[in-house]
Length: 411
Image 1 (cartoon, rainbow, N blue to C red):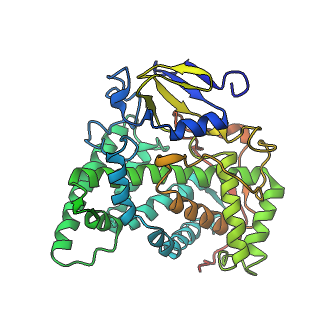
Image 2: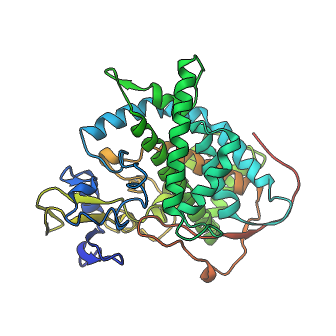
Image 3: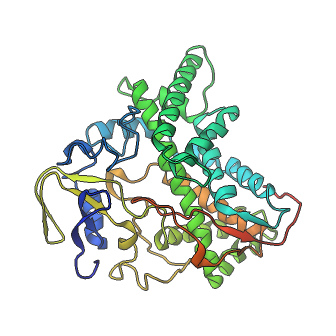
């Protein structure tokens, strides 16, 4: 399609007709084109969102529509500016030791066993616990979040049809938590967490409403955890399938620092991990298609005339393997430079949580390959299954084996 029909109209399994954009320059253009709205209100098939055919299942019924993935300027500009005041690079950087502590704790939980399912026991809980800590969810409630998140991505063992119920439960909980923190701030509580930061954030005297704060907390959780689950899962799988590249990463996290488990203390290690994570995002990224866009007026993209109201889906996975942009695109090269992939989007909707996801990815790979040097796939690759769905790309399970050990390692 990228070569012969780079902008192609198709009928999706849901019955919705949409344009698929697969070539890098067209994809980059579409991601930043103001004529392609994020609001489902511009879709010519108005009932599609309510039926769960577009957007996040359950978000409309749970009154969670006012988040950054669904709105355009000027509302998007206002909300993003407010959220950016709370979700700062400094806040993310200060969170690094806690992410490493979480990663080491999870590895401690299965290190003595010699086997693990890295999706269920590592890639899934790490970003859930991390974002819960950052948002300020009390530890006593974090298992509820883990359960709801499992329903939302159809994790094995989760009840079928639980996505809408999980979204509603999460919405109710977030509303109560926000009101509790708002009351605490009024009484002089320090409120160092992200939800408190969202409550305090203001722009020319304008604050987030309770509904906006709940929707923003929800989308930070929803968009932030599953993408990181897939980054860690897909990235680890790719490294296990490419021994030479895995050896490069392993040398970086054990050779430079001197001892396994202390990765991240050496500048060269950090630089290599940053480049490696970018390549893993390009090679087999966590998001296969960008979230929905809808033409607000007739426009031409890749030589095709797109009518007002038509949905447009940018196929990030195809654009990031475009040979016209990336030399030898099907080769995994952790030292690849000039890696302007689209894994976290482009333009005004560029992923706000990308710095946190990158931090979690670097930390996860350093911990895994530093502490489990003989980590290996414990299943036939042909037996592995990928989760269904249009937008995300991630493994259901990732069975691994390694030499058991009982000692814990932390920074």
